Length: 626
Image (cartoon, rainbow, N blue to C red; front, side):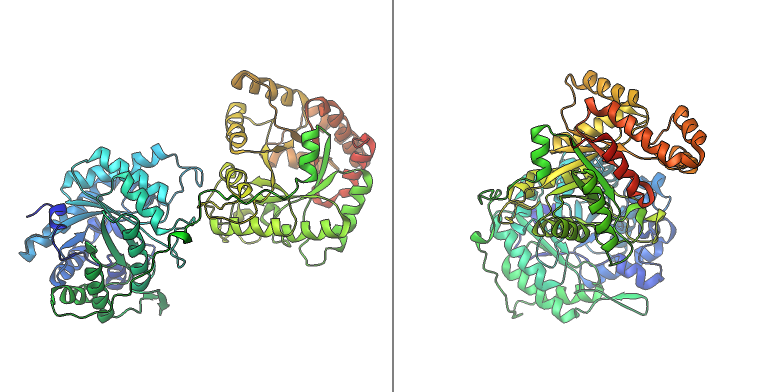
């Protein structure tokens, strides 16, 4: 049998198989979220039957049933300790099916999918950790004897590049087929066009570059032509879904006909694509139709060639001048002025009159601005940026918009940033956000594409320079001043300092600190920061100040709120105050603020349960604005 790459030098494309998961779902009736990879061990005959069907249809490349057989994905179903066994079994079943068919010149592709965890800065997985996870699966597949490694359905370009490089280091003699998936706009999840994807995959060392999954054949044809234009010398592959899926009686159905796939195969042959096949929704019938089309020398088809416009791809950096003035907060921080902000929670109603009245109270007391929480404690509330916009327009007060990453994908994040800026909002406090499981809707989406440090970097290094994450121009740059979270009383101070350094490196302009009731802990934090970094903390810190209003409140904060520790002397003072606990809480907050003022640049007052009158008393009594 010719080595795979030699086979690809022939004029006719190599025909791969179609969907595995779709076929298992149809045959067994398991949930589409089931661990299909484990069927290599638990239902081997089902996997064999599917391989046999694709071989009978004329496939020359069959992929192992190992798409999600990495340690991370398998752990979701309790199979992580069987990672190597599942991958080896997948290769064995493919080889057995080929042997039983009597076919020659059939190749086995080791299927490898994404890990399902974002890489830094859009997730918490370090590239070296991702490489180790990929290496385990790559080793199992290559030792079992695959003819190629097929990395497919990747939406994160950086993750796929890590996978390719790991494969080239671990198994340099095994060809690598690397395929990305694209959205309906022919862009990756974070906005990269096919041309950039093609160049990076080829540059990373992939032997074959291409596209799979995505939409149907029409989109795949557009994308693969753009990739071929960007890297004309590259070998290419194209494996589309059978159109866009729809749920029918609990099963996922795909509309593209087998005849349509035959036309598609003939068109890709005319374009010069090296490997063709199918992805989600495709069946042996689709592959058989493609086989017939590829083998028919008289097959006529229409090739819709795509005009590739070089001018359509924007420069990596916008040259639009920065004409947006900085915020008042940015000005105050740069001038070293003491800043006082008060956190406000939007109402659970579209009537914001009471919120406006409370904000007016705080401004009259001397607050520099207010910051608006976004769905605090995961409770449904009116949009935070709508509340900010209303307050700025009605009262002329500047606001700080809390901007959690939780529950937002990267597309929504960038759209929300542009929307906030269009509304005139200039200050952001980037945070992870509260988990939905503690709120009104515990089953709501809790996913996030990017951690706080990554969002800070995106805002400061991309949006504020006039481009989105993918390098596409957004016109005039944004002018956000971005804050981060800080807990000076964290149990693990060194870890908190490490996280803070990442946020500073990403471009944070200031920090909103968790409430501190023990000033020596804040002083110790600053001392330790200088010991570790060799320099004092220069990031402006607006220290959290939380007025206690009852013993019950104090005990709750001390015992149930992570990161908050209230010393016993303060608890005793609140208890002794009895009915005057709220007044004592204000007095304690004033004392803490006076003590901390020499080492901080502002106060971040956090009134619990809407007790804004207590916040006003703290501001008025301390007269920090004088």
